Image 1: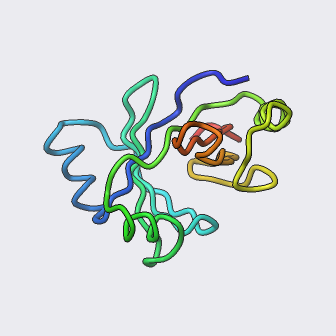
Image 2: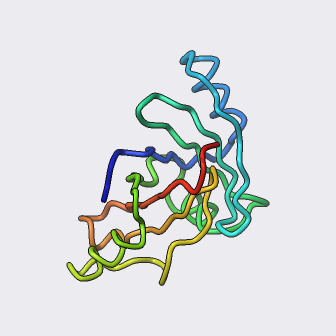
Image 3: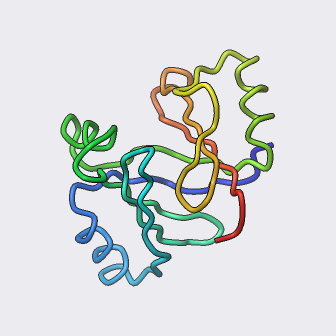
Length: 136
């Protein structure tokens, strides 16, 4: 079941500059960085309980975030909903006709399982489902 808005992801061309903006300029807390090799992204989390802002940047200049930035520049990338049973949510949503970008959830940032719903299933918005596998 979907339990919360987990985070709002912002694609950023310069991760260090974005961290400085959100943490130093806006005075928000910083919860560390995480490289997600499988997704070719570097992430930085800025907690605003009960949700987070996630800054996403291409890892080694590659992957889908690099393509996104090249095509659109920085900006809102996706919404992520927290799930307490991601496999059941994927099954339920597939039965309702939602298309996913992968066959099954995969490891994501902050020790979570994640999967993305294709934007055409959500009025043009890229939506991620995430289930923590343990507390970080």
